[in-house]
Length: 501
Image 1 (cartoon, rainbow, N blue to C red):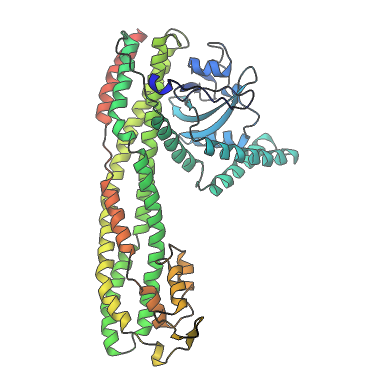
Image 2 (cartoon, rainbow, N blue to C red; image 1 turned 120 degrees about the vertical axis):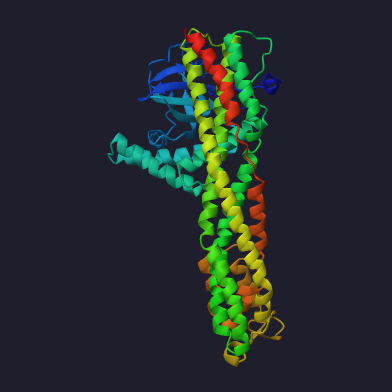
């Protein structure tokens, strides 16, 4: 990515004592199951201030900075021990006391772990997270002062971290990893970070670099979908909220119509409308869960694409460093490092293929169900409107007039009733979604006729939103590039095997 780095320099306004680096300086290390460093590339050694090979065999916390809460590392280890990838913003301390900040992503790798670090691209988020860390450290300090053990201090910090993440809108550390890794990788790609091409280079390492370039080309379409996946995740999240409000409105509307249809003519119309409303309610009942599952599937696909690109970049840049002489093939087991990176890349490709199969199956199901509910709601609008128009005041008695600012008499439930407009906003179709309980509470004191008018006013604009969501689901086509990736990696593995001999 020589072009992306051209003309750029590290941050010039960095805090005193901070060691900076560029977006294309991606570095990594591998550790055993206990966190002792096995391998590292030259960028890690340069930033950490340790000599080549001087880190091998040492615990990775040799670069731990005192600003980092114990709870963060408790969260990292908990995730890794469950076999999951974990990402975090981390401040490290170099051998000479300088600091350097990274966005680190650690994954299980064989009988140990692989950690890839990049320059934090989302600096505003990084700064917010560092503010969180300061508050978590304060909790840990109070716990330590109270006589807690180191394990108890870390547990207190972990609990405080989870509380802070939820306040930021993340469900837990897994959700933070999924959302943030995808956004960081998307920002890296947008900044022009890609694997260098060296067509003039020859030899086995050049072949490995060419293989990584081939994978990058094959997955280019996938990476381009990161932002589109994020938009679909957001859209589906909004539709889940809408479905909850709509379900409450349908239930309240059926109840109000049942009470308000007090003559034979209205009762016949009510039976027809109630059948349609019941059909819509039954179709809607499982939909929120299905949409939420599809949202999680989309999120998972987005995360896996990002992790795949991250490992592709790490392997490609390391091969380029070896070609450039920054890393020496014979030192620090560079072949072993490449093998671990390639294995992580291969595992990511298999995982993506599996997740895509699940996503496609669920997407087809959910899109069909969204369209079905949307059509049922649309079919209900005309008979519902006719029924509501024929409703009179409850039990044949005129409701007390409601006076407005100009003292004009206006009956409860009339089109001019200001309470109708306010309630319409509360139930969600005039002023945005509201909690289902709040939606029904807004009309609880009205007569059945008035409730029916409010809850049925305007028909079902949600039908259009659900239909549009179905289109968005069908439009997101994520190609499965696992065969192309596997083909490229066969050659890379063959080259690595020859280097071992």
